[in-house]
Length: 141
Image (cartoon, rainbow, N blue to C red):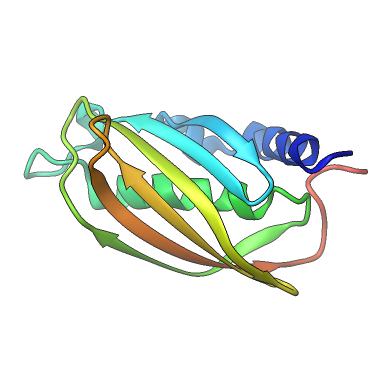
């Protein structure tokens, strides 16, 4: 199985059980080994008291992109540490895109950067995720 096929099959297996991402309205737009792109249109129920997209929603989008990227090799992988920097607000109606990129993978530890942008291409947030591979796979090979 080539890496892209493995990543697609792993993502499909994860997506079926990922009620959180689905219920928030995310879509999985791209997957390959070490990378993933998810998107979300900011709806009224995603906004906070300032009328902006709630930071937790932006974090969840980035975290989901991170999760799909670091599980793309069909090895069960979890978050060890994550951080986010909010750069600009997102508004209702904005289409947010989170693109995760593998920066480093050494043994069982990985580092991934996720950039969240709006539909004009402006950066909304920068997220860094540290992953740890655990026992198990997402599907039988």
